[in-house]
Image (cartoon, rainbow, N blue to C red; front, side, top):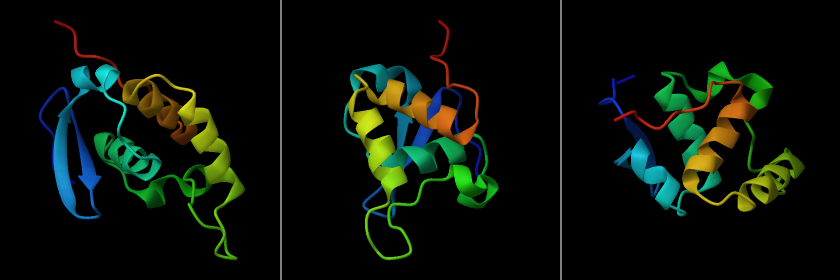
Length: 104
């Protein structure tokens, strides 16, 4: 895993395009998807999907339908006011410490 500049998080867009975001901007954003946030949190902590086992939410179940777990977390995330709040909810789901805003 590559080391990120302090105060940033890496988000994958369109399945391949890597975009670096400042953590301090996340409270003013409302645009990241559930999968993007899961991968961003894992990357922030230098981990991959495999590190999280059942804590990692799958979009589809074995029957190919949208999973109940994904629907549940999507509904909870929809109640958050910003990507910063959503990222920290994902941290809770994955058992990681919250990502803090950089101090000035």
